Each structure stands twice: as C-alpha cells, then as structure tokens.
Length: 516
Image (cartoon, rainbow, N blue to C red; front, side):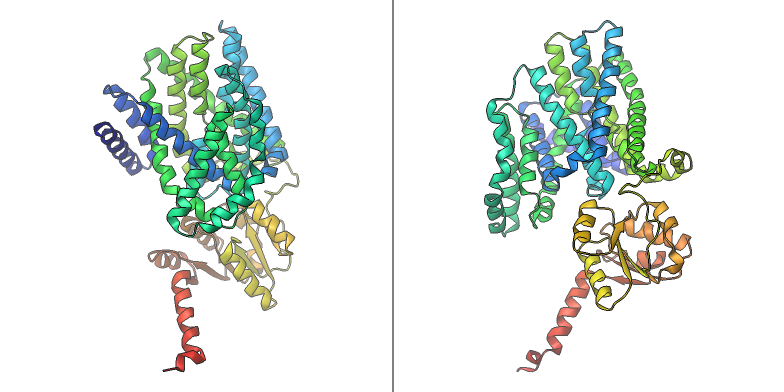
C-alpha cells in the first residue's frame, strides 16, 4: 500500500501544480513519473496492468461513438495512408544513412509516424470536439494507424495473429445480446460494471488470438455503437477511465531516465514533429478541407505514439538498434505529449492568430466543412441540434417560422437531413462562421450547445458583429446565467429548473389538482 500511496499522491500533487500553471494535469503525471524514477522508484506489474485497463476503457468508449463507414472517407484513407508512407520512407532513409539496421529503421520509422491515440482522444474529448467533423477525422486516422500497428506488432514480437483472429469481426453478431444486457442494466452501477466487463472481455479475446488487447476493446465498443444509451454508458465510465489512465502516463516516466546523449536525440525527434504537423496540414488541404479544420486536426495528430515504446523495445531486443534508442524513444514520446497537450488546448486561438496566413492555401472545393454561403430564407438559427436544439427547431416549425439548424457533428446532420430537416454544417467555435452568416437578416439565434465556453464565445462573437436580433441560450449551472446575460444573452433558460416549473404548473392546472 505504501507504493500505491506514493504513486497516487505524487501524481495528484504534480497534476495539481501543472493545472495551476494552465497545463493539462497529464503533463504533471508525466513529470511525476520521471521524478519518481529519479528517486529510485520503479514500476511493477500492477502499474502496467492498470495502465492497460485505462487504455482499454478509453478505446472502448471511443468504439461506442465510432461509425465504421467513417474509416472509408477520402480524407482518412488518403491523408492517413500517405502520411504513413512518407514518414516511413524518410525515417528509413535517415537510419540507413546513419549506418543503422534497415529493418530497425523501417519498424521504428513506421512507429514514429503514429500519433498518440491516448492524448488526441483525451484532448478532443475534454474539449467536447470528439463528435465534430475534425474530431471524427482524427479519430478515424488514429484507428487506421492502429490497424497498421497490428501487423507491425506481429513483426516485432515474432508472433502472428492466429486464424481465429478473423472471428473478432463477428462480434457485431452479438449486438442483440449486448443490447439486451444494456437495456436490462437500469441501475447506474450496473451500467458501469457492464461497460468495464465488455471492455476487458474484448481485450481478453483479442489477446487469445494474438491481437493487441486495445483493438479488442475498441471492437467491443463498436459492437454497442448505435444504442440510445451509449452516451450514458460512456459518461458512467468517464471518471474510472480517467483514474486508470493516470497509471499510463506515470508508467512512461517511470520506465527509464535517459542520459545526456539520449536527451539530445529525443530533442532532435521533438524538433521533427512540426514537420509531421506540416505534412498532415498539407495533406488535409489537398483533399479539400478548410485551413481551420486542417490546422486543428494536424495539431491533434502532432505527437509520437505510446505504441512506439512497444516497438522500440522489440527492435532493441532483436538487436536491430542499439539499446539507447529505448530510452530515447521513451523521452521523445513523453516530451511530445507534454508539448502537444497545452498547444491543443489553445488550438482555436492559435489558428485565429495564424488564419490570415494559413487561409491563403485553401482549395476552393465542395466539402462538408465548407462554411454556409447562404442561409436561404431562414430568419431564426439554432446552433447545436441535440435534444434541446431539435425541440426548439420543432417548436419553430409548428408555428411556421423560417428556421435553420447548424451542427458540427456530421452524423447528426446526416440523420436530420434524412428526416427532412433544414440543417447545415456549422461549428460555433469557428470565427469565420459568424463572419459568413448574414446576421442582418436573422431575427434570433438559439445557442443549444452543451459547452459553456462555446456558448460564451458565440455570444461574444455576435456582440462583436453588433448583432441586433435576440440571443437565447441555456445554462446548466447556477453561476452560468449571470455570466451569459452579462455577455449579451437576452434569454437564458435553466432546463432543469424550467422542467420542474412546467411540471408543477401543468399539475396545478389539471382537474386532478382540485381533488381533496
């Protein structure tokens, strides 16, 4: 218990300090790992096991939101595939020129082309951007990389997936059974236990057929995708997943403490990361994405993958590269995560500063992330077409008002368009969206996005453009209403308070209220 207390307590203190310095807590966890290693504390099998569970829970929750057809989109296959080929070719050339083993350079080169699944998903999820167009592109590219990683893992480990590995593709056939279990699990703790059980079961099945356990957990999540309660299940797993992931970040620092030479090599690898980001940005632009989408997606992918730690160890064991590379890669991965995490938190602000330069390189093509050129005859706009936004949309339609819905989630748009709703793509966090909208023709805007900062930003943008119409929004916490009104919101509704008020009013006005 003493070791566990030291690990958890140090992680907490380091995370608290870094969060006070406006860095994500995970940067503190990485630092805590190196500090503990310097103090002579080494990881045991328990920490590694907890880290594996954290990654499996993370990928299981990702699978809950994954649409398989998203992997077949042009930007995913072309950008993800070309990036892998180019980075691998350059890495092999450099290793060969330096006299390294060609096989080692090939394996390590492919590994260095991978981006950190843990960091990218965590940052997108924390920012509420996992379901946006660029969030889904990033997620799909990461999954494509994971698929390539399966083959690479087989090469480096000397093991190959068994013929039974194809049986994992049959997991969707168990969907009706899994749906029944989820429907029957009405208590919150039962949903939590079901989610953990399925994630671990997927990992165990994958290991039995010599496949990465992470892929098995992901596929198990995909099996449940589409169920109405998947969002609720993911929310139940969120806190547990976060706690287990602390072990993963601690483990990186605890693995080894590099020397001076390894530090210099790691810094060279870190310096090469902007080139990877530039390559991603260029490829995204070539497939027709806007500069904003390309920039934010590239920044999320501009890391080295924790998977490189696994392949580096295997390559060293095979005597394809000298042992110093194991510590070098570990430090390079840790540094890339530490640098990328704070940058991704301010990605939208960074783009706002660089927009005048970056937008020059956009291609004028039709793509889902294009800004709306017109809102037609609409006089009322609803930003965010979730349950609240859709209810507001239907209320406008019932009164024959000219209303248009905007949302950044392509799957939401696809479903609503199939129902005949008037909706278009629009990300409230995109400053260019507000510049493109004919605000002088709009009588009112409802902001129904769940994130408070996003609602506040949208109101600020409307005020900067001297919007004369009405602004209505929701507040989920008691202290939000005053802030939103101070920014310029005309109407602020607290959905939970409003629900109670309406329920009481209807009961009191019903004939049953007169009974004694």
